[in-house]
Amino acid sequence: MLDTLESNAARAAAVLPSSTSHWSLRGVSERSEQLAVRQGVAEAPRRSRDEGVMVSVIDGGAGFAATSDTSEPGLRLAFERAHALARASAGKTAFDPAQAPRPREGGRYASRVEQPASARPLGDKLALLAKVEAASRFDARIVDATASLWSVATDQLFVTSDGMRAEQRFEFLTPAVQVTARDGGVTQVRSSAGQYNGFCQQGGLEVLARADFEADGVRVAREALELVQARPCPSGPMDLLLMPDQMMLQIHESIGHPLELDRILGDERNFAGTSFVTLDMFGSYRYGSELLNVSYDPTVPNEFAGFAYDDEGTPAERRMLIERGILKAPLGGSLSSARARAAGHELGAVATTRACSWNRAPIDRMSNLNVEPGDRTLAALIASVEYGVVMHTNCSWSIDDSRNKFQFGCEYARVIRDGQLAEVVRNPNYRGISATFWRSLAAVGDASTFEVMGTPFCGKGEPSQVIRVGHASPACLFSGVDVFGGAQ
Image: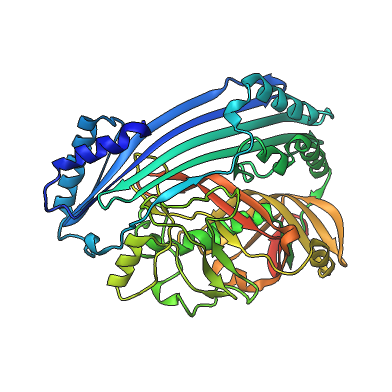
């Protein structure tokens, strides 16, 4: 599709009147394969292919139109629809969209891939899943087990009336193991990195080695068996050590969503709520302790939402959003930053405006949102705790509509007593308030504790868009957190 798209677009756009100040076209071709083995039985492979185009036009206002017909007549019709919407919105917007900065220079990007998933025979991939799943069922108390593998390859082309051209190819891999154990009336679920796929990276089958996938079946099952024999997590204020597979959820919900600029400007009120962050906080608000440094970094190797250009064609660059605890910048693209400027706030733009597919217009999204490493080893973090809990792997979340008051649950936890890891506990939970929680950050793990995680399932927008997000983090220690789990 993309081979002929550029020439078809140029001819189709000729239908636009001379009053048009700008147009762009984003073509996407995506192929997906989902495989799973459950209880020794291979499920039917799920394969899909999706292709189409989104065009945008600026003529007084801004208009968008999508089509799966990428022929010249199909694109011409899409441009006509987008132009009609642009004219209909002229004079009715908070700012002149023609004044928003537009990228001029393009280029190429490709995920680093050593072993393309598509090059390996289906039988080999299913045999690997069967091996991992079978290894987890070594005890009669394991009542359910699944090993799965989801691979996606995406080609994307972005061209504009200014001659800008960006071509990007992505390959994504999401391996997962999930086990359910039952003993004495207690049932517990343990997964390799979260029941909603917390370990996912760009790359090919080499991602499996980075995930230690072949060993995960045994590890996950052993931990599930520990949980069904464990007492409930203790309750009360205590130190809380969060490992990277829970830190990613903490970052996502209580930093990522609150900092999306379109949400701060009010766009999400109908659907996903607002934000406790306001425009006047940037540059002065203490978001966390001096140990908190948060970056937007689309350049981290293998991270799930890495790219060279966002879906408005803006070149991607690393930027600090929170530095030494002080809030510096929001997650807002060129259009949202222009809206903020019109309201008297010069915040700058971040190249993180993205769409989930060809048939959605891009909006402000998290991409690679990371907590920067500190200087403590994991052993040093544990040794510094007199009494507390270390929690792994998110399994539940609840947060209010301003992304402030939250309650999160994890799959697996251990008590820390007198600087030593002690007993395993089940059903660990904690709660807090985003506006104050990060100020309790007492220590940050070093590079040896840093892990690159992510999720394929970040929801936002009307109509709904579910998108890939990357989060990398070290282990982090928080003091005086309200922990609960049913034990007194």
